[in-house]
Amino acid sequence: EMIDGERVFRLNAQAGATELVPGVSSATMGFNGAHLGPTLRAAHGEKVRIHVTNELTVPTTAHWHGMVLPASQDGTAHQSISPTATWTAAWQIEQPAATLWYHPHPHGQTELQVSRGMAGLFLIDDEAPPGLPAEYGVDDVPLIIQDVTVQSGGQRPGTPTTTPIGRIGNTVIVNGTYEPHFVASTSLVRLRILNASAARCYNLELSTRDVFHLVGTDGGLLPAPVPLSQLLLSPAERAEVVITVPPDADLVLRSVPHDLGMSRGDNVTSGAEDTFGILRITRANDVTTSELPARLPAAAHPTRAAAVDRHFMLGDTTINGKSMDMVRIDTVIAAGSTETWLIENTSRRAHNFHIHGTQFIVNTENGESPAPRNRGWKDTIFIAPGSTAELTVPFSAYADPTTPYMYHCHMLWHEDQGMMAQYVLT
Ligand code: C2O
Ligand code: CU
Ligand code: CU
Image (spheres, rainbow, N blue to C red):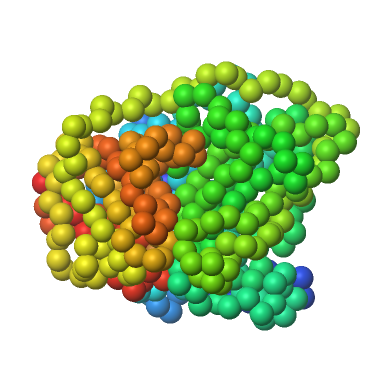
């Protein structure tokens, strides 16, 4: 709804019960319903205003993950919403088209609220390049992947729920649906995939082993489609992929075993050896065929600085040996500056690293050119034990010396344990 030149949204945080698996009811939470939340959409350049009402019995927040915006609008624990209260966020969308998302960020309670289903997509639109599928729900399809623990009737009973990376579920649901099936009415299907799990990583491939094309990462489109046969997504990461659906197709997008870089035992308990079907895809008889464009309108990369400005070491549940403190500012950064950050996982646990209020470019992983999946704009990057990632991080001009943004591991149990720190722009 447009009011006075602003696109206005209303979100109500709610709790309830949902049949995540047929016949089994689970306690769930969501926005504007008992599970998940509506897809929000706004265009580059638009002003948005979002009213968030808390109908839960506990405090919550609404964080716009991946958004470049003032810290006071970011929806962290500093913008906590008490039960029955309404908080309003407003800003202007200044970043290019991307698949972002929103979720709560109450300190210490994020894993519980997100894994119960408080998550939704926030799509930023810009002029679509011809040939790239862009019809929402038809050939441009969101996939919110979450693992949940269902007491009976789940896919993998007996899965341990607590692991070195946090809470792992025994069943995978997509857009809240158990064993989903999509009938394609076009030869090309663009999937906007969000790993909204608390801890579980997915290594996606097609059951046909055919290649698919990565066209976008967390922060927007790539300069050209990148052919891949597998794609690892850690919690909070997004990927836009285009799949070619052949006539008579009956294929499955699935998650297959991968290496999280931990000990064999820790990899196994953390779900790295699991196989799950994510989405069955078949094709309708009559389809529209098209061809993927060779070039995409990607935002230009910033220039890489010569020296590292800051070095962050990831421990088991700490950053540079410290635990999150809501009143401590860990890092002060000049608004509008671009910095080089070196992130090093010095622990034996798999982690990832997310920075609020910006999108960054990965210069190197372990000193070498980054994996193809990390060559576009990112806000979250997986970092295996013993690995490093060097990032070029352009910070916005939104100076506010008193309201911090966060950077943290997005494995939500680690985050809740305090694997998070704060920066301000001055
Ligand atoms: Cu997805 Cu601190 O956030
Ligand atoms: Cu975030
Ligand atoms: Cu972690």
